[in-house]
Image (cartoon, rainbow, N blue to C red):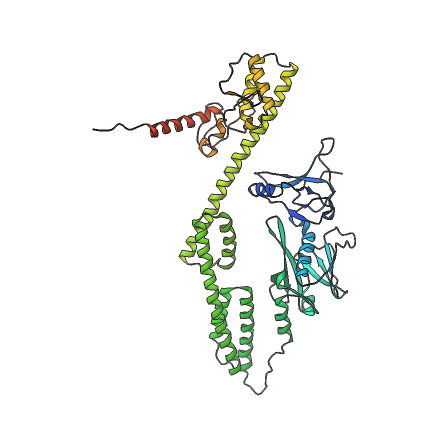
Amino acid sequence: MRRDKRQIQTAVLGSADSEEPLVLPLEAIELDAFRSLYEKDSFWCGLLLGGCGGRLTTKLYTDRVCHFAHHPGPDGQPHVCGRRARSVNSADHLYVKSEAAAWLRTRGTQAGFEFTQLDGSPIGSVVDIQLEHKRLRVHLDQEVAPVWDAGHEPVLGVSVPVGQDTLIDRWYVHRIRLDSEGTARRVRIGTEAFARPTEWFVLDECEITDRGLTTPAVERIVQARSTPPPSWSPGRTKREPDVNARARALLNRLNEARWAGAALAVQRLGSDLAGLSGVSRETQELIIVALREAHAWLEEQAEVRRNLFAQLDQAVTNQQQGRISSLMVRVNAMAAHNRTEEEDAIAVRAADCVADLSRAMQEQIKERFLAESAAADASTRVGNILRNLQRGEYKVLRTQVETLVRFAETAGERVTGHQARQIEVWKQSAGLSPTDNRTPDDDGTEQMKRKRPLHRQVARRYWIKWYCPRCMADPGKDCTIADGTGTGDLRYVPHDERLQPILDQRKARQQSATRPRRSVR
């Protein structure tokens, strides 16, 4: 079997047969918090995800999305897994079961769940929910075509097509989608009808009735389809039914615009209705009521809009990046057009703030990643050199011990106490002068106090502006390995020759600031 190189974004907790799913954050800055939250848990390529049942680990990257990965096989080779679904939505069927079961329990209802595999479809395509007198069949993808009037009510994923004839005959169909929230997915139920936009609701807004799954939109659709159209008398003038028919159409569109939250459309339709003349008295009364309700609705929307921009302005002042991002989504959805100058200024400041904070966070992540990579690489080199020294594989002892000391300084706290004592022994054997910063341990042994490496004392945003006299790297460029090979490979950390002038300048400024001023008499 060829190795599948698609990235795994979902797993289950605790064991291979677990039904508790979770989604891995895509960004490195979020993965640190994720690891801290689940540090005592184990991740598995779940059997109910169509996986192999193997254990997973998390992979952190700064230049691409983070993901789960299998542990290598016993032979050290990459693990081969035949799992087909690996993306963020690959555990949606488990989230559907979990959220639906919790929702039904709040209503005192129990249900059975089955991940039905029809016609060879993969697990997770269909979720059957068996209620006491009803049965729902959730189609999360297009693998299984929905069957109408077959003893169950289909609920369709957003990618599952439905014909206009079905919408007309059935009056409406239900949709389902799952939105990502942190490491989880949340269920939304939508109601779609012919010539109407799909309206979405959280599960708490839905009910199970004799009709089946019901949302607030269902009642409006049923009422609209059940109300007979107003009769027209042949004795009236020809102009009257035309004007009244146009008024009724505008009234319907006005109601739909309010349901969809389209303030601009509500304003325009209200103006059109106010400009109609020649309508019947009954229609005129309907128009007056509708315009009064539309005006009140627009006032509410205006207040919501003012509060939204005020919250965004405050979040920018407080530099709350997460809150800024969530508020910007609402602002763009609700007030993308016809902004005032003040609103535009707030939105621009918010966008700049998010961009600046993102760049700063990316820089911090990169600095930390480079430092950790350098320390890990140096720690490995320390272990290798110590083993080779014990085997007597080096002809020039002093040179290798000096290299060993440099790597130990870069490795920092990764050097164990035992390795530190070995390094001291080899330094004495190589004739290197003993360090002055040795202190005895409580048990009589000695260990080195390691000096903090220069690259941990100067942030990247400072040294990247300097020219490197060692490898000739220009400002704005990373240092390259200056070992005479000419490969041009980038170093994990900059050369000390690039960092030392910055530290010297800092020391000079500190001395200047602390130097006592001479009093003038």
